[in-house]
Length: 330
Image (tube, rainbow, N blue to C red; front, top):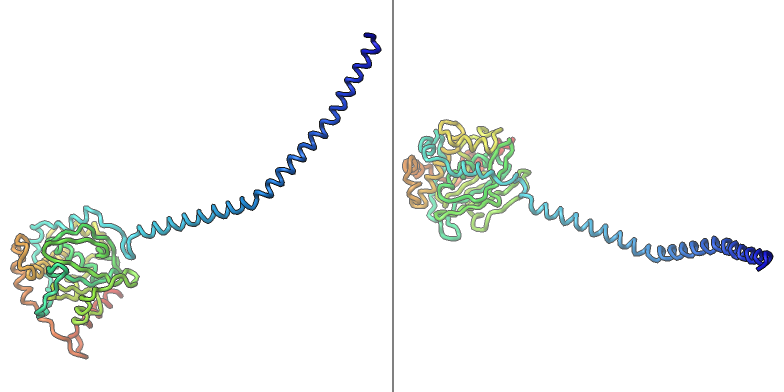
């Protein structure tokens, strides 16, 4: 081939190559524009679904959060309750040594139990003598009474659950809300009528309401032992417990010479003796131990409750309860 022919071919090849190079950027740009247009159209079609998905996710998150709060609220103890009592503390309160119970005797306390003179005995669902407690979580006098009551009741049965709380005036104690107690000798029924904020917490059963009416109960605490004995006061001044933790108080119960122990155990021995008198001295290993027989005889000679006379100051059990609770809550 001649040089002229070769030159013609090379020139033609270059022209085709240059033409291709000139066309490629346009094609590439056109392709990019078409792709961008397709993505925009796809995004426009997809955006409503994306918004719906986001809203749905938010709603699901809100439902989950609400569910978590409801679950946590259900797991929280009732109003006023701090939490379960430390098992070691509960053991010390429910297993006071017999040597301490014997040595303390009445602890020098005055008997606050009153004989009702009633012929009808208050019994529980199973026909056992019923110990009916009516109190409130805010009430300092109730806080003190519970310590003696728990020690006494533990001699006739078992507390498997007994939540911790405290009253006004910072009195550490228990609450009978959601407590669990079993006994082969007695039925224990507790009503905590108000929480620490004075809100309604529990109400008496229908067969207990006539008792409160009969004894003109308008305040706290009130204790009815099988309708044979009633008490409208704690056995000791709750101020003796002020500022002490549950653990502090429980640790003292091993020392019969401690004033706190004398108060709590002395009251417990009175209550134990009264309960023994309605269980016909059962169990024998409790009702015949230490000072109980002698205290029982004294309890059976307690003053007899009399129907209060209208407008007679000091005769009404209701007035007595109200005055005492007003003083302690101040």
